[in-house]
Length: 419
Image 1 (cartoon, helix red, strand yellow):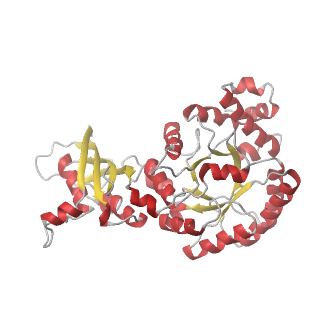
Image 2 (cartoon, one colour):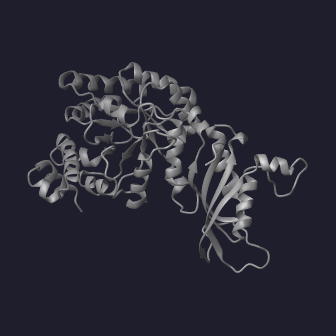
Image 3 (tube, rainbow, N blue to C red):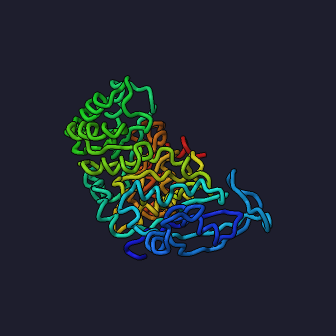
């Protein structure tokens, strides 16, 4: 790729000729309008116009994927054509700017009447973006160092119930989890600064328990406090966690926006745990929004150290192949580095370690289990141990049935959670 151009790849569906549709996209997002205007010279278009790099024709369908699409007024055969379209944009149009990048590659394109489907599926960025955005500060290695875990996944959980716990309810639960040897705990994305458990009080209570257990055991777990709020609150909330001895903050990326996340990264001294709330609205339709491949690149650029990818055999709409691709994409180098740790969650328990490791043979993940730990029939400590045992079996290539014969915590988990 030219070092001064942005390359965006789309999946499109249109009733119009593909070459025409691609030119509409390029013009809409750079120099063109629906009619030529004064000043729209050939020289200006050459310097600032988007270029159609490639069109790969795919299948035809008879019904549009999205409502509101126009069709040609004449000579239309009733089919909608799908294709992969690559466009390149000169970086001079926007500079290395995340918000203006989004306006360019994902701006008014989705509303264009010529399209009955349009999805951003990949994005390549020139070096100036790497110079402007430092990316993850801690990533995989830094997270492992803070947790003291090097040879296996980080095992974690989410505070449940998500909403309704009062400040005093957090202490006993966190104490139990810390004493069970868990590596990581996160706030639920729904709990940020409620009146019945204000963030300031919650941080104090939780960190006191974490430090107390760490003094006794030598292991200090990582707790991702949800500091999501208005932009002017992020620094104050981050500093609150840092001053209390916390080692991680969590932000709902789509709620504060990519620029808000990048703003947090500028001064953060802690790993940023990125939650992808609202992701389904951006991705669930296969012919709308964007792919996770694009999304995780943008989040890495903004500076998160961990990013939710969903988990295999989850309770949501994504299939296992989609989740495996999300994990792999997160681990694939980007802009020469930008390491990020995938976070697996949703319906997870000890058994999901094996299909996860078979799909993506890595232990560089944070594996979160809510009920899979908290509802283990022999208690929280057994739940944590069963998760580790599931991963031991996965890495060793041993079936759960065989491994559970000598690991009672795993055996109890299988009896409780296997369907």
